[in-house]
Amino acid sequence: MKHRAIGAVLFGGGVLLLALAAGLVFVVKPALTKLPYDLAASTSVAEAKGATFLQITNGEIKIDEADLKSTVLVSPDAKTTGTLSGDLDGKAVVWKVGQTVDRTDTKELVGAYGAALALDRVSGAALPWGDQYLDDTGTREDVEFSGQIYKFPFNTEKKTYQIFDRDLRDVRPAEFKGTETIEGIEAYRFEQVITEEKLNLAEDRVGLLLGKFALGATSGEVVYSNNRTVWVDPVTGSYLKVREVQRKTLVPNVGSPTTLLDADFAYNEETIKASADRARQSRESLTLLGVYAPIGLALLGLVLVAAALLVARRGAAQPAAEARPRVDSDQTRVDQPAVGDDTAEQRTARDPEGGPLTDEIPPASTNWKSDEPSVPSQRPAPGEVEQR
Image 1 (tube, rainbow, N blue to C red):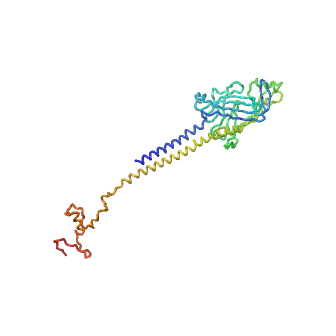
Image 2: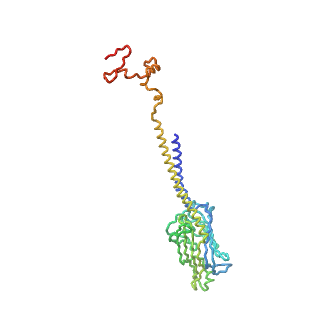
Image 3: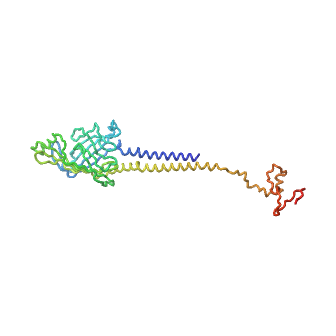
């Protein structure tokens, strides 16, 4: 009974550990490979040395040169996410994003934008959402975000992805170009090349630029180029490093083109290190709860199940051994003298009258006579004549 109880406890514990291992693989790990609802806000800083840029200050338009700093703040909006319904409920998270571009010498603001969008929790791609917007002119504009913007999918593949470009309001392909090590993490490098594409700007904005830089021109356009390179942690899909070589040019129908922007923005060292640290922490959580913990629990569970079966077998063998017949010790008392060794006086003292109730076995020699000469003849009983 004791063996059965121990075996049941071990077996139950083993099954429980196996269930926990399965839960980590099929429930916990998939939950970890989704954008969380309570993700902390993050800031990334990119710098451009010796940039050429358009600056408008108090209505004055001019082209300047200076070092620029771009700061992007991503703030997950848990409150708005909680109001999502339909296909977005449980599938998407809402992020609010703000960017400022400042001169590093005078701290003057050069440009800014704000946006709100819904991202797929697994792929990181933008999803259609009725309240999404983009504001880079001082007025919120309805825009249809799509593709990858601030993040790649969990378990990023070595293939071409579509990255949304804010200036074009559309996606362009970003091709996989190889792997590089960023802060000890093997990163996938993707490159998106945009070459002299016309920007869809309001006529009054283009006219303002023509009036300043192309006197006599009756029409013109602003063309845009950008060589965007992103280094992605393939496990989490997080950006480890970003570089954008941007160029915007005013092309009038009369006169020479004017460079409005020529800047090479890249994450600074602090941002790269912080991005790598966040990715590393997420990687460790995924590895611990998605690989090591399930394997450890599964192995321990199998050991307990095997131990339970072994204890059960030993417990079943024990009763069989106890069922074998045992000789009563009273039947083999070693302190009794051998029957054949008793003397007549001892037999008489033990049973003076003899008779059928005695437990003495009579000597076999009293019941037979032998004619063999080798056998000694028996002494006749009293009153009995010896016969030959």
